[in-house]
Amino acid sequence: MTARPFLKWTGGKQWLAPTLSPYLRPPPGRSYFEPFLGGGAMFFAVDPRRAVVSDANAELIAAYCGVRDSVERVIDGLESLKNNERTYNRLKRAVPESRVDRAVRLIYLNKTAFNGIYRVNGSGGFNVPFGNYANPTICQAERLRAASQALRGASLRTCDFGTAIRAARARDVVYFVCRPSGG
Ligand SMILES: C[S@@+](CC[C@H](N)C(=O)[O-])C[C@H]1O[C@@H](n2cnc3c(N)ncnc32)[C@H](O)[C@@H]1O
Image 1 (cartoon, helix red, strand yellow):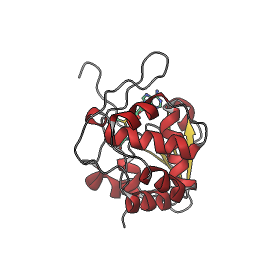
Image 2 (cartoon, helix red, strand yellow):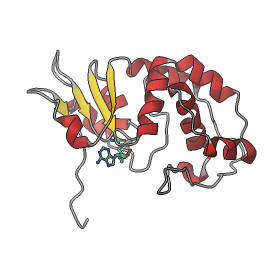
Image 3 (cartoon, helix red, strand yellow):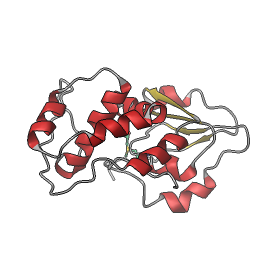
């Protein structure tokens, strides 16, 4: 299965990925950098052998690490969860420590929150209401396995984009989208 994003993420570039990704493959021995990873649409479309991918959102990066390193445990965790408000509220309040539990929490909330939005308040608490969707696909097992494979050659970092791209060298590829100010 070709790897694709396993999260709905605001501002994702799934629509742009088929057109742009063929031009973003790094030359042999060089790395692909994506410092605003989000849902990773471009990363999965490029499918680089070596990558440095990062985001300022620590929960997001912990989730990618959990999927990369322990995908079967993430799948088991997601399959054990029900789509109801009680489970949702429990996970919304939870502060798990392991990357596997952080991945399970983030993916579950992403699939069941209203509009799949990820939003936190000033103290870092997740504050999106329950989506109450009839039958959301909480665990996309094959998609998670494909993503885990694609992430195997990726170094994942929680950091600001400026810090992330300082490690880039000649002939590495760095991808991000700039929005014109005021636009
Ligand atoms: C629109 S998403 C990225 C979409 C993704 N590149 C794609 O192809 O689908 C933007 C991401 O940038 C992250 N972000 C915002 N400000 C940041 C910063 N200063 N440094 C690093 N990441 C940042 C957010 O946490 C969010 O996950």
